[in-house]
Image 1 (tube, one colour):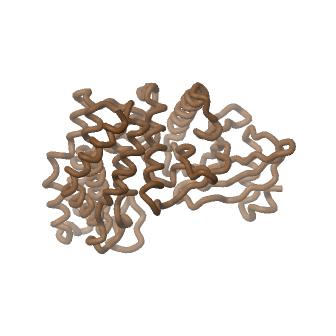
Image 2 (cartoon, helix red, strand yellow; image 1 turned 90 degrees about the vertical axis):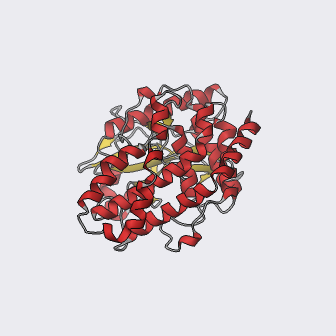
Image 3 (cartoon, helix red, strand yellow; image 1 turned 180 degrees about the vertical axis):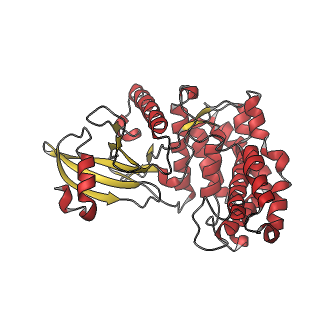
Length: 378
């Protein structure tokens, strides 16, 4: 039984499993993965002559305070995706997440503390990667997120809740977070990062470009994932082809450009986010091209020309935004991002701003790559 395997937390997780409408007899339950926010378990059940595995997640209620809206979004999007996948002759149990309701018909189970539990069917014969050793693997993740965007092209994003207001509103973050932090300078740190402050303030005029295009209705709001890292794509164990996109906690209305851009910022950089040696930080154009080709091969028919023309710029903007957020948190005394040492957020900020500078020098090449990939798609 589950409690022989899961040790000290056997009673609580065993009680949680009994709340969900799972098929079969429980065989085992083990903690899985290395998430920093949610705790994840794999529960294995015997169903006839076979087995069925379920993913059970303990969602941190201190981080995700609007659990009802979050789960409404998740169920709305996955239900729509299952419908589209079926219509296209695919396998909805592999190509999107299939969430399981509780025995009471609820979308999640509320625990005794500030945590919530939700469950979905484990994607069979699949693996994920934390980093891409080749441009081809990174490009495959672009195909996955491009397909995600394409399949949701007919979904009315206005039906979703905005669970994180102004998430990628760069000019709002500048005016409402960065400038107040700079003015207060509660830890007296601004004097030691004047170059970084000047770098950010000199680019203020660029920060509102995407928001203006949205207001002018040149760029539409779409369903966006908002956490397009490589490890949120499941790949087939045998073929290594992308199977589906996971981790839908931040799905909400947004600008599709930023899903593309954040993947580039994180996955096409030649260094980790907190690399101190800034000469190691740059944009790998081979990775940028591979991801762009994969993304546009699926999403190209969905995006309009204005969106495509701003893909490269959005990659710079979102990198600038994160650099600004790291510096804001440094000025505020490291209240938001977890740090391992005193100047960790300053190092991160410098890293991201170095990447911005390199991207700016390569913008013409990036735009050419986007254009060439768009022509291939058409």
